[in-house]
Image 1: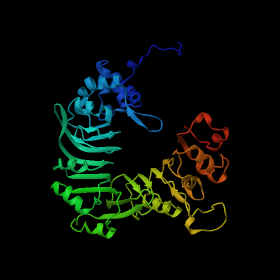
Image 2: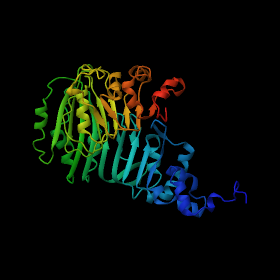
Image 3: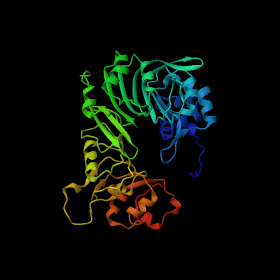
Length: 433
């Protein structure tokens, strides 16, 4: 018997083996390739594993999302989605294909929707709302739809989770949702109108809570930024506006950005149950955020070592950290000296796996690569400026940063064809550039 060749084909394998193979593929690839090929493969592709959660996007190696090709989408619109519509529980969509996908069929069991890359002036057809600021994503829980030509509207909505980065379209959107009983809201609002106030307790009560008689759980993080400095309230003034909302424990703080001449007020419910917090500054107060895995730090004032100690203590399960700060540290410590300094305790990030630091001064890259300041976890993914990396590591020779660099597995935004051999010797466990 010649074991080099076999007449066994894919279709000859038992269902259990086929399912193991298919589960290594993207769900949309399984559905696109196997649905309606024959009865057996159709039934396997219709398994709940492949139909309940659909991501109608493709991902580049650095995590950038884009829509799938038109010919593939066309078949999903016309054939695949109507075939499996009752099995779909969650959809991840990109803005350019959102309207056609949501209009393709009814989704009676859909309870989750994630929208990516919603651009300016995009018509949010599920809600009939125009918006003017860029979203990163929004996620909607327990959402049922009905078709109304020519628009697509929601019939019921009981939860809204993590709506990020849009302006005053928030209020008219929420006014359409009087049946809401749970609201998780994460939003940043830019105010450019003179004398427009910060979002405070009075605003939440009058514009949101009073319109939701069934609301029994409200978790929020709201930033409001104003570019005028007339009649700015104090933090005590902001706290006083929550006196009538006795069911809510709210933390607030005000921060001023002198270079851009903008003031920011951040209010958030505590305890905090969402997984992300954004635009945290040096004024961010202490607390414990065990549910938060993603944070974005931004300031015009420098982040010192003590600040990062506070961050590590407040977010013990931090996985993704983005730092945006172009101001150099003022109190840099020479960790290569033998001087003792209580403020130079080594900071441990036991769960961190993605560090995005390409929009920051190189001092912050050094803060995280210097093993006398920071102990990183293994399998770190790093988004960084190559020149800063060269500088901080002394052109990939510095002993003080080698230990943490050996823990890095992926580095994005670097041309792998233009790095020296010493780079690979220094980042000895690198897998992807």
